[in-house]
Image (cartoon, rainbow, N blue to C red; front, side):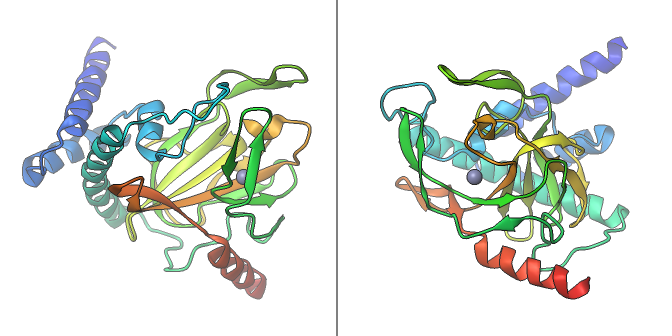
Length: 281
Ligand SMILES: [Zn+2]
């Protein structure tokens, strides 16, 4: 018990050390060390969810419950976060490739797999303006797929689960709006999964789930059941129907920073994935 605890501490300390170095990595030593840690626990370097979410969220993110736009990061912080993320990605890619040789991947195609397996409805809602009740206006950086509560959600690509959580607790209050008591990936996201795709260095962010079946650090094949459609996070509002919010990001130039994560529109890929599922049914 005791040694497990200390091992956990060492893992946490070494992963934080690993991520806090902005120098070009001494790939050999850092990667091997990190891989040992991962193989030991089958868990991804115990990187806390909030730390991972800070690396994922871009410069357009604003704090909730403020009366004015307030960027959560300075350009310097975005730039440092991008460097940290790049180191992490190199490590995740090695980890994925090592694990992949052990696992027998059911599916691993170049095209994405329909995250709802042919169920539910969606339209091109990417970039729609969204107004948070009396708070701010922002762009919708993803596609909403409306489906019945409890519908299975599948991994669109093979990859590494870099953040996951299903312990979101909150409710909708007519006067206060969204009341978040804790858990989940964030107050607005609710329960969900952040999946890293080593093939094209991209991230799939799937949220508002009910249950989540995968854990941080899992290496999964395309089509793996990640969880099911829920109402956690923002959709707890009386105005929205149960849906999966799917966002897709890749490194690019944004906020005057090279290698920041930039939202991509997954609509065309989703349409193709839906067609392919329907053709096979
Ligand atoms: Zn959405």
